[in-house]
Image (cartoon, rainbow, N blue to C red; front, side, top):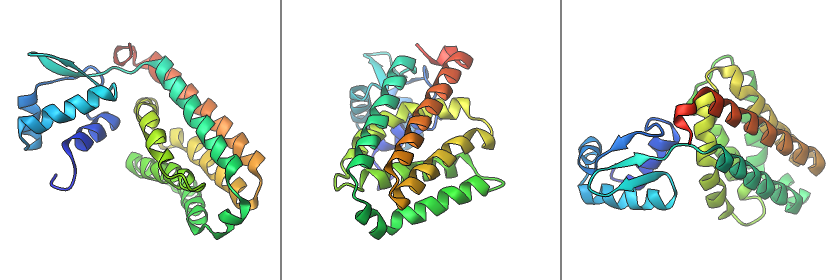
Length: 216
């Protein structure tokens, strides 16, 4: 906790669905749970409210915002557009020198072939995928935009994907994106990103249908 802000701690718990949409918290109770002063929780709630992740009800409680399908679909479109722009901008010569892309591709292939992997292992690879792509064209700050948009997408994935097989189509599409990058076939990478966006939309709609109480 000393090296991680209370804002980040709560944000991770929201993203992982440990703090479910619609959950209520008081500053006092959360401060006690996290072992931190109430002032730190209050500051974190204020920042999270700016991110539309919590709603603060003065003198009462703070509520974890419910998911909104339309907003999630917008986020999928935004990330799709950013990644396609990155893919079009990247020079093939840069990819040849970028060992991180090859290593990441091998990691995704291993994930596809792994008999058992945890949800946390998938999301660690998922994080690495977007972090690597956002750094390819010399604008790593794009990852801040991507990860802000991704948070609620990840929440719906955790809701809709309960089995290893549910994550495999995503891991495969990530690997196809990287395959295209490595061989200089941008069109193949873009096609995989478009298929990925369609897959994420399908999972988001499934989560909204199966968990209506967690959506607005």
